Amino acid sequence: QTRLVESGGGLVQPGGSLRLSCAYSGFELKYYGIGWFRQAPGKEREGVSCINADRTTTYGDSVKGRFTISRDDAQNTVYLQMNNLSPEDTAIYYCAADPACWEGDFDYWGQGTQVTVSS
Image (tube, rainbow, N blue to C red):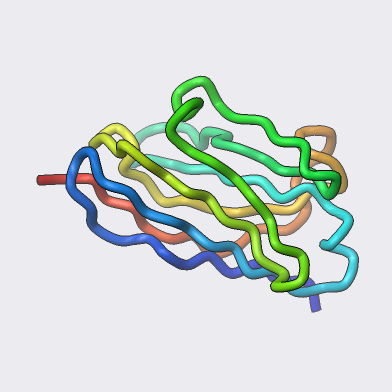
């Protein structure tokens, strides 16, 4: 069964860090791009970052230099290391799978994990 499960969200102070995890199941996802998205209240969903099976990565302009995406296919997990967080990063973060980053419709989605940045 193809499934993605996010974890690692929580409450953090401005300037702090969090690492999100996206555990995926389903043999074919080892060959998929895995992306992170976020949606804040009242705002549209935003693409944050994506990593292909060949480890090529992309980042949204708002997170470049602060967030790092990586994957460990032995652990069937994709990580999003988030540093220097600001209140503007507060959102529900989702991971999703696409045969290649940004080329399809991201066929599979997780349930999301809340990230709140506040003092």
